[in-house]
Length: 388
Ligand code: ADP
Ligand code: MG
Image (spheres, rainbow, N blue to C red):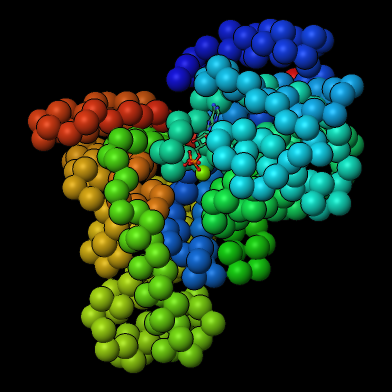
């Protein structure tokens, strides 16, 4: 996949040209939705807890405009594929990539908003399926486009909910609000501290570049296996523990030792310990960031990784190797990010060092016979909106 950041202008020119070819007229505008990475707060969302994502500079961009017929026409530059569907024929459960776009139009209509025939031409440099939310990036870009094209006055959090509705009900992927809230609400140099119970989001300053930091995001390229089953087991374990403790969710544990003493099962105790300590770490990260002490995020990232490795048991060899090598190569702190069993790690680095650290990880992967990783460095970027 070509990168928007390295060839931005050419890419956007190609987007406009393809739009012109498909729609027979210039696009009304370009809208974007970013991918995101979760700084801290893993497997806390379904326990009514806290997460702290920030938006990436990698983004999905759609060229969009109204049409005179009754069609939704969609095209992906990366897949070189065109899909068209009559607005009256939008049907949840329709598979494929176009569901992430069509689902938004369907969700807007289902939420009572009036929209019409539209051409949407998509390009994205958010890596697919790496846990960086290429899906929410598309949805949130399309929501932004439709709101402007059809003059819909929808609050940012409600835009995120429309995007999630597209993913949950239309595509059929049962995800929380984290991805869409991050892609829609994030701001440049800020993270989004999100309370997954109240769904309230607070912007918290993460001026990494200004303080001399960057975040290495490295995709281990480990094929995810058994993820759904393992995820279901973790979730069930948390729900059972909450039921035994007589609380609505593990977020409500106020005394960890007391809670652990009430649980007989050793595995369940470990799962609870991860969720409760991860929530505390996420709250602490929020405080640390509010006070502008970004370097103090590092030990929280390290502790989060240890907790996912030892208590929640969701890391794998490649992920642990990447984190350990990052630390040995000079990263201030590092952790796996995302659901686990592969995917990406993040490492807080001094500006300019992320790439060197990644090369050390690549060498360690080669020595161990693992598939080569892919990486980029990131600083917190802007949420969805109009690009041009
Ligand atoms: P993630 O959100 O972690 O990247 P998902 O499985 O949720 O992974 O979403 C990935 C899906 O999004 C892809 O399988 C594809 O259907 C769609 N997608 C992402 N980028 C593009 C693109 N540039 N063109 C078409 N579809 C895309
Ligand atoms: Mg996704």
